[in-house]
Amino acid sequence: MKQIYLDNQSNTKLDERVFSVMRPFFLEYYGNPQSIYSLGCVSKNALEIARKQVASYIHANASEIIFTSCGTESNNLAVKGICEALKSKGNHIVVSAIEHFSVLNVVKKLQKDGFEVTYVSVDGKGNVSETELLRALRKNTILVSIQHSNAEIGTIQDIKKLVSAVKNSKVNDFVVFHTDAVSSGGMMSMDVKKLGVDALTLSSSVMYGPKGAAALYLKKEICIVSQMDGGAQECSKRGGTENIPAIVGFGKACEIAKEETIVNNRKVKKLRDKLIEELPKRIEYVYLNGSLENRLVGNVNFSIEFVEGEALFLLLDANGIMAASGSACASKNLKMSHVLDAMKVNVVVGQGSILFTLSKYNTEEEINYVLDEFPKIVKKLREMSPLYSYFIKTGKRKLSAS
Image (cartoon, rainbow, N blue to C red):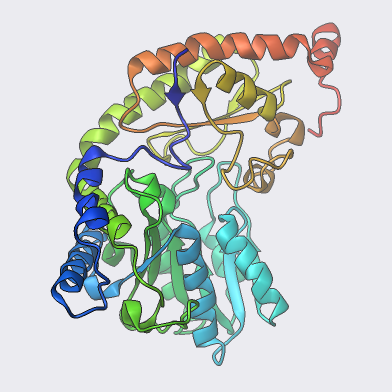
């Protein structure tokens, strides 16, 4: 049976060039980078080279890169750390309704500690409105956190425009703007100076690098309170021995992304567009979720009416196609995702969503296989669906909220 991996938003295949630079730091250069003997110095040097590589990818200074273990940790450090550092100036936080759980659950926790949170709504394509964002700002706002792009629906926000609006609003002069750019890593070029952000999250595991390494870009003048107490690692902003093999791999992944993203994207976009164009021709009552124009090149998210997303997911897997039924951190919940809910997608339709995320390793042959097999799976499920049977008999959508 074929094995076709289309869940690249949750994790990508490791680039062999990345693995080759990591291997010596498992077997030969295993010294602690905080130690001053020769083996430790090799690790320390590798750490700083990787820091420069990550910084170069997003056009930052190396001193502005803090290494962490994953995107979730970076988001926790950004949101908690910045809010704690600025709590004497205010206690209000603004986030979008479709942020990753590592932002949404953090602000929920901060609410219990006395912070106030405003959730900015999105339109039917998942776009954050500049007007709505400005309306959410207050005199005591200290942090705005808006995703660079959404992992589930692929919509890319106009972060440069949103940052400019916030910074020029003159509500106050100490609002920090953070963006979670994990989903954009390896998929598009980023320049923190052009974006104007104060903090940005990246993760290695979704850009052909290893698990266990991520970064938080923090503009040099922004204060933050460490959330991992320990030693003086990462300029005392994140205690704990650095994961040198993973960080070395992350640095290499960023170097490759900087050089090859444009070329890779041409290929990936062609395959993505084929899925987006062909599936509705082969399956009735399917709806693309997210923006078509401002969309990650590897993202395809459809809601399939009259079927359940979990059933789609399982039958695809049985046919060798590995996809996702929603966000990677919520796929075990048998309910419509918070992202589609925020977009006001009809719950009867939204529960039948399926997410394909493509990588540079996918082929046209694989996409053709999906186009052949997916309609058969949908047909099989609809034949068992009482909602579909009712629709065929009456022409009416039973239990629809619309």
